[in-house]
Amino acid sequence: MNKPFDVLVAVEREGKKTLWSKVGVGFNGAKGISLIFDAIPASNRVVLIAEELAATLSQQTYSVSTPVEYERDGEKKTRWTRLGVAVPNKKGLSVLMNAYPINGKAFINLTEQEDVAPETPGEEDLEDLPF
Image 1 (cartoon, rainbow, N blue to C red):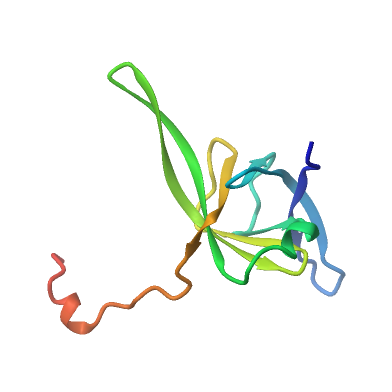
Image 2: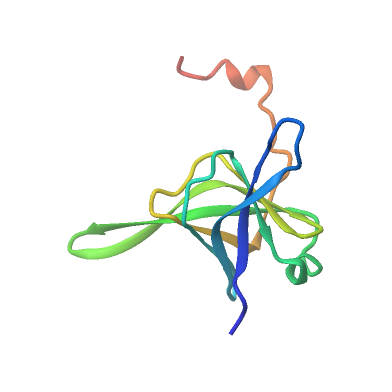
């Protein structure tokens, strides 16, 4: 069985050494890493410590999503809501999130790459907006 990875958040202290607080764990799977949060981080950045994994990742960004379960016509279904991106670093992955999962679960998809610099619409594209 794979050893779980620690998920940490930096606690900055003025004039003092930065402390790291564990807020969850990560488990390596066939398509990516499942994250389970014990606490909601106070910042939008957490770090997944996985040095052996870091050596195998290319320098690109990966999608971070959360499963949202719902029921339709008596059948349970799951849809995925995007939370942010994960970026490799020398110790593992930095996970940058725009939102946190209320169910405490997130998934880093290592099979799909993210476009680092999305296209910016030109002025002519902005004229068609309904507001």
